[in-house]
Length: 156
Image 1 (cartoon, rainbow, N blue to C red):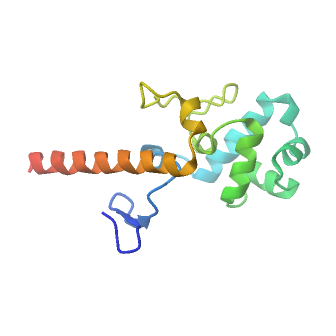
Image 2 (cartoon, helix red, strand yellow):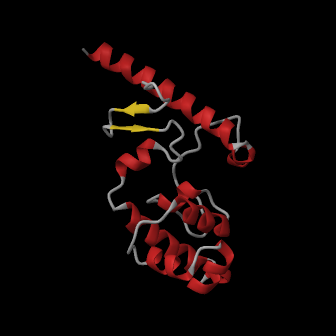
């Protein structure tokens, strides 16, 4: 349900959010660790798995994120901005959402979450402009809410 300025009310989280969330709702809802702990664990594992990015200095240089921010990120000491996440993800060649995935494989940069589209590869999806990705995600969320409302109606 959209409000007058285009924000979507999400009853599961009790907040208004912009339709393009950038990560799957089920990942956010199922996190057992704090997001900054997941991020720290994943960045440390990725650094260990990629020798060219194995030190704070190397990762900082490759990502454009300051050494201090990278160090605090690996220790889960502070909140990390989206721009910093983008730089780190780009340095490792993975989607930003993978940095917050509890099931990240640091050797491949992949998660075990199944890819939802049979006729579209992740590589093809990544080539789409952000606006088109947002449209696809918003439509998928709309379809889910329609289905969920019908399920709840049928159960009542």
